[in-house]
Length: 59
Image 1 (cartoon, rainbow, N blue to C red):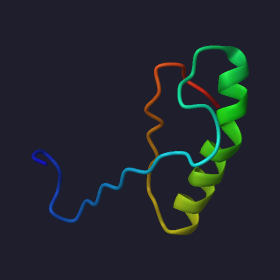
Image 2 (image 1 turned 90 degrees about the vertical axis):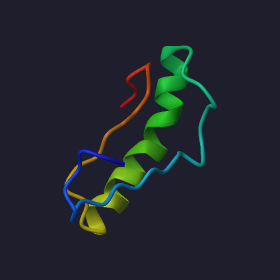
Image 3 (image 1 turned 135 degrees about the horizontal axis):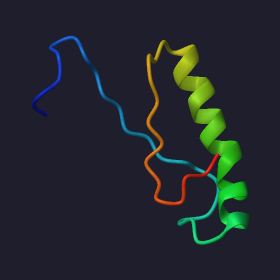
């Protein structure tokens, strides 16, 4: 990947539980717990930022 600093690391992870797509408010609610779990794990591992890549904007 170009355009990032040499000491920058990027990691991509996906939710393990929840809907396969966000098609409704219900889907967003069902996806939120695992998204929040992953954010907390990232914070504990020293992540400086989190990007939630979802067109439905859950959580």
